[in-house]
Amino acid sequence: MAQRKKPAPDPTAATITTAQASALLGLSENWINRLHKEGFVGKAGRGRWKLDAVVQGYISWLKDEERRHSKSAAHSRMTDLKAVQLEMKLQRERGELVPLEDARLVLDTASALMTSTIMSVPARFTRDPKERKRLETLVAEALGKVADGLDTKAAELSTGEVVGVD
Image (tube, rainbow, N blue to C red; front, side, top):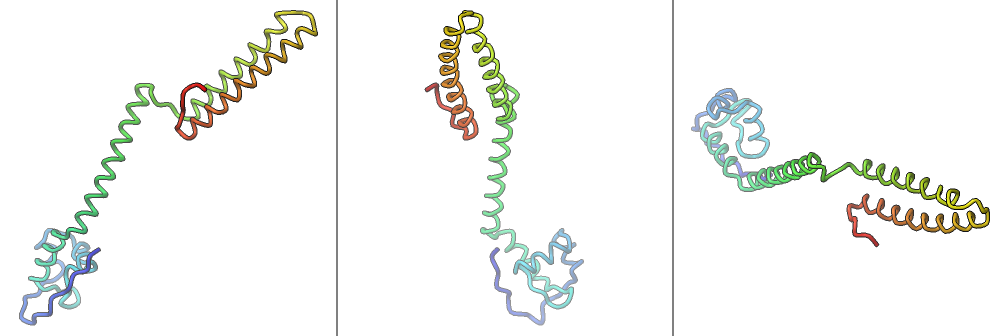
């Protein structure tokens, strides 16, 4: 916060109380004290303020470019965050955005269903133990490749960088 130079004391200047300064500017007494702490208004004594210094200090505070810029930047960031939040809400409502844990659950459930269904094929295909074992090996290898691909996609979900099918 910018510190302002306090004008030299003028012994002839009118002084007012904190309550009067508050009423004059339409601010709370805490605001008057804050203006003093930020260096915009100097005290004339305990609970006393120079009338001209209070008015000029408040005008300086209103014109303070650094404070206004900081406030404007914070407001802009807040507005941007609210826009992002609203967009995400709309995406959720349209079904375009799902929680990461829900997406992982779908992948895990689909993977488990696919594995159990495909692993039952060798037993239904042949009763010959030798051929069944050979077919189970081939199916297990294929499912291993699918599982590796699903693991890769699940990791991509965590980073938000899901790319096309490899």
